[in-house]
Length: 80
Image (cartoon, rainbow, N blue to C red):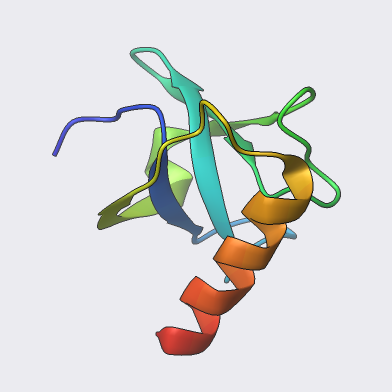
C-alpha cells in the first residue's frame, strides 16, 4: 500500500504506540504524522515507516482543522 497524504495509521512503537494519526507527508523512509492535539497539522511528528501500520482508511486534509482531525480520529478509534 502506498503512503499518501490523509492516510490513517496506527503507531506501533514509541511512547505514542496504540494511537491513531493522519499522514501529513511521506518520503522513502519517514512519514510525518498529526493527531490534532499534541501533534498539530502545522507541526507534525516525524516517524519511521517501520513503526506505523496502515489501516487502509484515508481522509481529505485540505479543509480539516486540528479540532476536526482530533474528533474524527477519536471516533475512528472508538469504532475499531
